[in-house]
Amino acid sequence: MLFGFKKKYLLKDVLLDNYVDIHSHILPGIDDGADSVETSEDLLKSMRSLGFSRIITTPHTLPNVWDNTTESITGAYTKLIKEKQDLTSQVQLKVASEYFLDNEFLEKTLEQNNLLTLKDNYLLVELSYLNPPIALNEILFAIQMKGYQPVLAHPERYLYYHNTKDTYEALKNAGCLFQLNLLSVVGYYGKGVMETADYLLKNGFIDFTGSDIHHKRHIAAFDRKVMIKSIEALKVAMSKNQFFAD
Image (cartoon, rainbow, N blue to C red; front, side):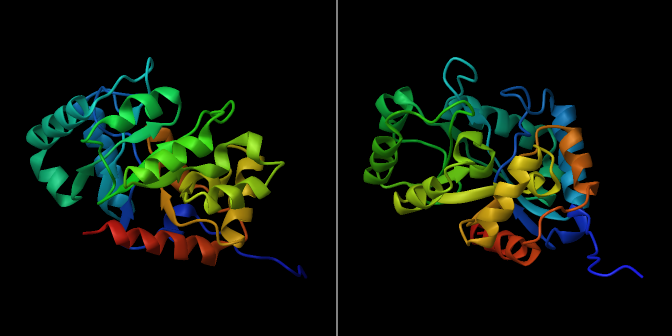
């Protein structure tokens, strides 16, 4: 007889009904996500079949890589809405952006008055995967002085924080909210990221979750088993996304 066995759930089965997603890359042709309206349509259909009820898509704003502006992002959004109106209305598609934090963001992007937020003043931001900006605390302070609430995308994926977990508490104290990637809990990005996701959930650091869907491989990963222990904390974090339902 086996003892201590715990059932493993598929991510799609753990996903809450009418899930509100606040992080994806499904607008056509403007970043490393969907490359066409047809791809956007396929991803939206798949997300709807998984139970997504509202999707706030968040293309990258990353200087010299994805030089998006509010105008280019809203243009792609309008194009998709116009060409796939029935589908986009069924999933309540909205648009924001995921802003890369560096000196250019501090000196130029933040000075604009039309940044695309998740809701009200909630601004989705990301860091480099290689190392954080030297002036990170200054940037976070400037964001808040401008009246925005920074929401840090996928903090579990920044490998340089894995061995200095007290940094997460420092970031929270600096005013950051945390958005966990759902695919982190199935080990999609590796064991270290999965273990850090579990740590952040267990310790109550995660405020929201997001799919970060770029392509069909991300959709397929919802059929993988959840590998973390903190499933109830994950469900609580997912439920907090209802804040963005309005």
